[in-house]
Amino acid sequence: MTTTLQSIIRDAALAPEGKLKIDWVQAHMPVLNRIREEFERDQPFKGLRVAISLHLEAKTAYLAKVVKAGGAEVVITGSNPLSTQDDVCAALAEEGITVFAKYNPDAAEYKDLLVKTLETKPDLIIDDGGDLVTILHSERRDLLPQIRGGAEETTTGILRLKAMEKDGSLQFPMVAVNDAFCKYLFDNRYGTGQSVWDGINRTTNLVVAGKTVVVNGYGWCGKGVAMRAKGLGANVVVTEVDAIRAVEAYMDGFTVLSMADAAKVGEFYVTVTGNKDVIRGEHIANMKDGAILSNAGHFDVEVNLVELAEMSVSKRTVRRNIEEYLLKDGRKIYVIAEGRLVNLAAGDGHPAEIMDMTFALQAMSLRYVNENYKEMGKQVIKVPYHLDEQVARTKLESLGISIDTLSAEQKAYLESWAAH
Image (cartoon, one colour):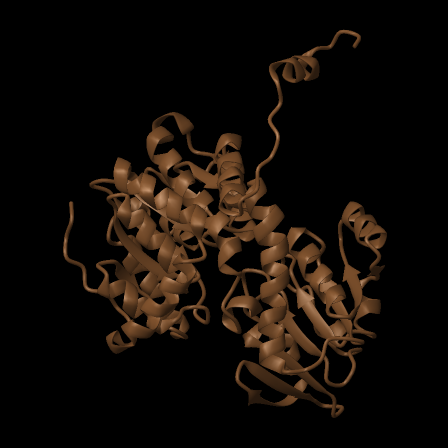
């Protein structure tokens, strides 16, 4: 089914810079390297087309190359207009992967690139935030019959998929990669924790130690952001709507407040809930002069920028990726990366070693879907535990770490209900 498709990228001359980035992450992704060897041998995607929508930077690019090594024709686009790296796009296009992506396209062009990706009629998809799935199930239902299934990367995407499954809209199986142990325990916690502060620190060039950081949401991503803020010397406040998570944050040593009260004390704010309007005008009205707002959730809806703009008399860019809103009372509020994903729109995303595990799960889950989609039904599927464990074991091997194995007698002991 191989055809010649013309990539849509910013500048093909940037390819050498992008290749260096991809080579760097490849050298630090041993789990994915092992899977690439398996794919090259087995050719699990031979004759198929795979569409990928992820944050298009070097680590994602290497995942695309691994899928291609498995025999697929790969078409890739970005999942956020500010996280796409033009040099990486150019490098991928040079290596025979079709790329429909540019850094910072306007809203119409961004949507058009997503649609063009789907118009190549893929058999399998890897999605981030559910954008491809949503388009397929709304305006391009004519493309649904071709789709065997796919895998979803994020909490936000899985929330959308489960809503579709619940009302009977979902038309093919999707594996919930975000819910796998090797995803949320490491990617969501350690990856988000580090990359969010990488993005904030390099963008603001301000000290965190001694400041009050408000983390909105204490899921696995929020836990990581709070943990790293504490490590940087911040006084950390957590806001939550879930009582159990709020107790957990309290017992982890953090101050727990309502957003109304947290708005009065924060200097840095990081929203990481997956919901909309977490920070609203009523909160901004009570914030300190110079408060810095950022978002680590998938969509740019967690900070209500419309209400912030209505409260302001002017807006200007004061540093790259920082906009200053001058309020009517003279206070200044700063927003990083237009309220988009701060770790990718203003940084390079998660460390390579972290994404190594996540993208290994993506690649293995895609193979699992392709081999089992006829029996899966139209639903959200958990990553099988044996795939999760395989990723963890391969990671340990790459680190030179050995662990113990239960003996037959120990297994029998654990499985027995009789008195011991």
